[in-house]
Length: 457
Image (cartoon, rainbow, N blue to C red; front, side):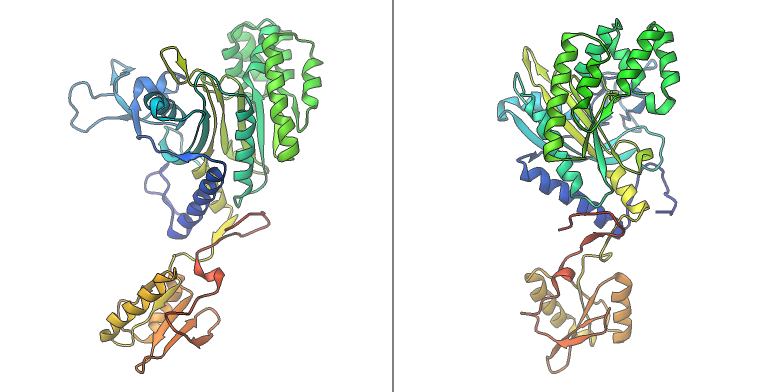
């Protein structure tokens, strides 16, 4: 992980690192499918207008054009983004909303999907922030309406998925936009989106500077700014946040609706994912399309990494005429997680290659027979490769050791087969049609390298 990348912000893993990433991806797929989420993949490009219609993030979007472009292909015209030009998607939620609208006639609602793909974002490269990275999303979308219970379910599924990974303990920090917006309205702040944007900067610039922003940009009084900060300061792992909010003395119907919804999420989490979910009323989420539940997730002890999983409820992102497709979803930053797993050596692959057995060559004419042995081993699920040259056995064993292959297979001139575990030096007679390596050596396994608990298949 200390090596220098030739192009920053576009990570490339070594084979043993890629095995850790594959383990993370496979684990997430397994959990998502256990909960009935179907896999889809959307195109990598959208129109600029589609990408920017629910949030001003144009500085982060990569436009797409050819080196020798035709007229109309440039994503920027006159200093402004051309809404008809193409750009790489910066997340998977906006493309998914477009996908639902275009395929609504073929989908059964509520539609449950998971999606694992690369996305591109104009970030300043650093650990946890890349320009090209992989996200893993789950969403449930309804036709016309979507029961709030799905907000609760999504949080529990993500808690289960993250618990199955070789990562430190984590915490889903949950808020509700209705709660926050209703509270701001109740204290007389009408530009609720502006207040949310200011509160979203709380961890970066601190409460004093947020208060100044609220007063200078939104016209808040000292009392209003302090009330907004008091709300943002409420954090509980149980239902006590309800009483703390009510103690602030603000009355508003939207506030009550959001308070009830957040109470349902936390109540379910206390019962089914104890210690994993926290009511945190400072969570705002910067994108404008969120309308209810909002979530950010941190690794405990690694908070400087930022959120590893975020998302929430969106009721108006996808629509077709009068037909609305409300949804709720969360997105895991796979690349951000894997970069931390690798840099902190939280988990390692048991070997650097899939191969379990190298079939050695006693002489060049034995290559065909060695391929027959390899075919028999592979037919029983044992990853096998054949040596390229009939070098001295010592050199072939060193080659296997350098590659991280645990077993070397030998065939004597009389047809007797032997297999050697080059780690222990033990060598035994074996038959290609029956021999099996120990279960732990049959596949590459990923295990924690430290005190981090993990569930490894």
